Amino acid sequence: MAKIDTVLSKLNYINGEWIGNERERMDIINPFNGETIGSVPKMGPHETDMAIEAAYSAFSSWSQLPAQERSRYLKKVADIMIENKEELARIMTLEMGKPIRESRGEVEYAASFLEWNAEEAKRVYGRTVPGRDASQRITILKQPVGVVAAITPWNFPAAMITRKMGPALAAGCTFIVKPAEQTPLTAIKLMEYCEQVGIPNGVVNLVTGNPAEIGNTFMKNPKVRKITFTGSSAVGKHLIRQSADQIKKISLELGGHAPLLVFEDADIEKAVRGAISSKFRNAGQTCICANRIYVHEKIYAQFVNAFVHAVGQLKVGNGFDEDVQVGPIINKYGYDKINRHVQDALNKGAKVAVGGKGNIVNEHACFYQPTVLMNVTPDMLIMNEETFGPVAPIQKFKQDEEAIQYANDTPYGLTAYFYTESVTRGTKVMEALEYGIVGWNDALPSTAQAPFGGIKESGIAREGGSEGIEPYLETKYVSMEV
Ligand code: NAD
Image (cartoon, rainbow, N blue to C red; front, side, top):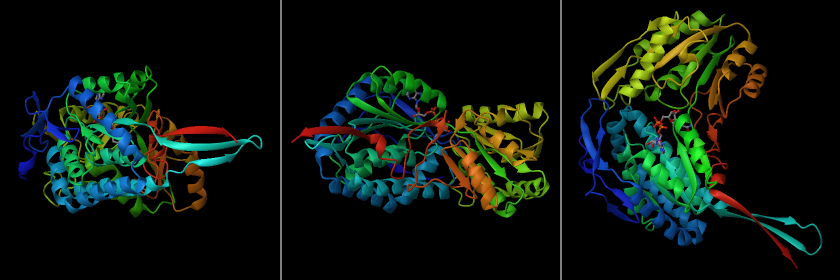
């Protein structure tokens, strides 16, 4: 088992100081075995307001720093993350269980958002526009929003922070993060890197504690101008309601229910490989994991045979074993949801092709076998809700229109995948899918270069690409008479 001395007892980072040892603490659990691996302070409204005050005070000088200098800081944090890739990856695997190779991949992915936004910082252009008459001059300025408060989930403990911190700092905003209670150690490490590269005091801050208390404090304090959230649609809707009182700017990256369509002319080998990586990475606990698979009847048997065989080969276990591909489920709550979806499907007539069972080691350590369900029907829970686990239900279809209708018949709109070798069919399908992200023969579409985000109940705004910095900027128009 990994031993990481530096993470045993950690503090919060506010205004360049590490504080909080005197406070009540929250334990952090290793989901592989249920052992307590450390603790963080349970901060409340007082400390959250301290962090807001620090970020507010730092805003003036940070926002006025030349973009090239802000860019250099971001680049240095990205570099230090890569230099310490193994350390950061091991912390992630320890606190949330994902296979160590995936954790290493996440460090690179997370650093890429800082690197990308280090470049975007230099390209925040305004505009000049011809006036309505000879004496009018119109100038359009892009300015940082102000203090940004970020609330992040446990499933990508590093990347979901850098995807927000990168554009916020690049734009000239100052930043406070409340990481998920399951994975604060990765977040604390990121703050240590920010401190090491000399990011000025108050520009980045971290608070841990009761989510609702910290969230309420962000919402009530008028010095916080923007909330950026990644997590469940339920909490996202709650935050929208709360943000109404002060009309705070809000970005939301919420849940999904991704369909994966395999058309009759698909490259089956490619589709099986894609379905495996989309469905089973992070034990199925990503917002863009394929949640339901639809396969054309002509290739159904061929696809299912190859897919079931591949799923049966997946190795489940301790994320620190280099050859493990599926780690533990984050907690008993997550496990219970997966089990509920499988039991509901079985009660309604589904058949298990492989897997189908869980393993509760203790109240904090649960696993679920990589599972394929056949004979599924649209009325089953698993075909309508995000499962967040390693279970793949497969349904047959006859017509392209039918598959598209199934795919779009959901309140979610984050990611959809499809496999076809036909450009004509693919073009029609990509245009018809009501999703923010579409993977055409590509099961891993996320990258810093592209705008990630959902439509419908999957979110508001985008992260990444040239769109990613926009939500951190205000537009001001100046009209001048000469
Ligand atoms: P969650 O909504 O339970 O928690 C997310 C964050 O919100 C955590 O930091 C949590 O402490 C905080 N939170 C909970 N209640 C709160 C409240 N009342 N006020 C303020 N903050 C509160 O989600 P989770 O279980 O951590 O993450 C899984 C969910 O996140 C899934 O639905 C997944 O699809 C989604 N997700 C979406 C994306 C995306 O980019 N669209 C990425 C990753 C995860």
